[in-house]
Image 1 (cartoon, rainbow, N blue to C red):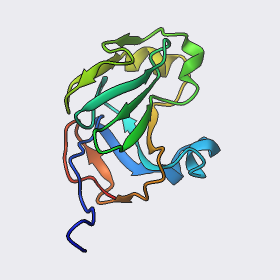
Image 2: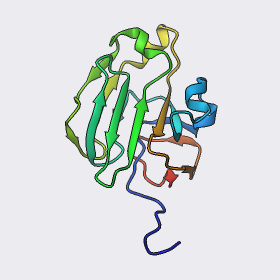
Image 3: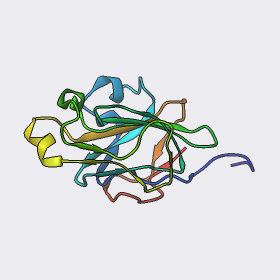
Amino acid sequence: MGLFGRKKVDFVSPMGGRLMPVTEVPDPAFSSKMLGDGFAVDLTDGQVAAPFDGEVTAAFPTGHAYGLKRADGLECLIHIGMDTVQLEGRGFDVKVQAGDKVKAGQTLVTVDLGLVRQSGKSLISPVVFVNGEAVTLLKTGAVVRGEADIVKF
């Protein structure tokens, strides 16, 4: 890799649970990589955090999705669960809003995992990179929130 090539970057897992390729997400908009390459986590931890220092570019009022942008232009979308928009904010305690500056590991939202499960919604939560980054997962399986070295660009 050349002097200016990117390898692993400052990026930590925003969630704890089971880490999987984005192609395993049960929604074709994500699994086909239509929204971008990335990964997903089947949540076992109700805290969802910023994966890097940056700015919140979008915080949906329903609490289920967040856009973040890093100073170098890397942008990601964190989508919590499948069809969770239908919960209309129930079970999501939002901690940030669009325009907020965040640090890696800072909580974006606390999710009531029991309520989401009881509603019949999946907790599989994709993280996709919307600016065309190709992503290589460096591991699968158990991951803890804040864990480094999970992806390479």
